[in-house]
Image 1 (cartoon, rainbow, N blue to C red):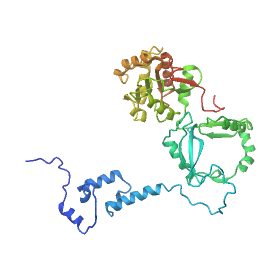
Image 2: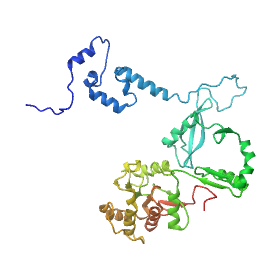
Image 3: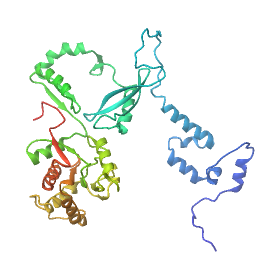
Image 4: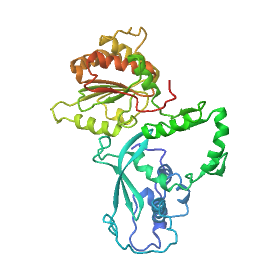
Length: 399
């Protein structure tokens, strides 16, 4: 007697399938017999793949169901297709040289992400931006793009985007602010902004602050660089912005740092890392990446060796490695995650020497960043795979 391998699965009813085919003409297609029979397994698959549209399954056949899905996707592409305002159309007496009817016009610009500007090319049609790509001639993007850059075009067509000045939820003007500014200056003006790396914008804000000596400028970002700067200050006595050179790195240790996706300059880092992380590179040496992380990241998926750890345990691991590299820190006495990593990883980093690179993620406390700087200094990597620059974020109010 043969035992059923799937005892809980409902058997297909051939009579129901025949009834489903009665009266149908022309060509019809089904992905499987389960779909033809509208079995419970198929309906569960639809609910998992298309949860929002699953309620339509009972009243629509498969073809109509896919039409509804296709229509919803098509409508998503019409977000920026607002009707033009009624106006008179007048021909150019002398058309601009760069304007050719039916052809897109491109502008070089910059897109700010977490305070850092990235070079972009903006494609426009009849004066309307429709596409953003990386600028091939910009040293950061080098023609590359990411999801944030692609999605930024939607900000221009956001119907809820602020189009006027407001005060306490009511419409206002800049003249209203100028009139009220002297009274506010007596108590001190407070300015709240995101990270600012533009010297010109910093100078403008500083000029406004100078008119009110008691004023304070605050910067806030949920993914700021505070831990990075504090860690550099612990290691060198003053804050620095680390700039990594993955083109020179042979052995990389990432301490919970998603440098392929989240770090400033990740577009350039991705290009340099990918060029070196292949069997046939420019110098014939393929880089090796060791990754410690608390959750799955893009960088972790590209690592040669990945260790999933509790983020709170990264510092203990960093101390254990630093002690083996000759950094003057005390090795942890308790249990350290990845015990089998410590000796071969330390040997690999020492072998690479100045071609090694240790970096820490912003989610880690300043102590981990300070340990990363100490290890890079012990390996001779500073000036080779990592360069220390003045902080890019500008805020005269910072201590």
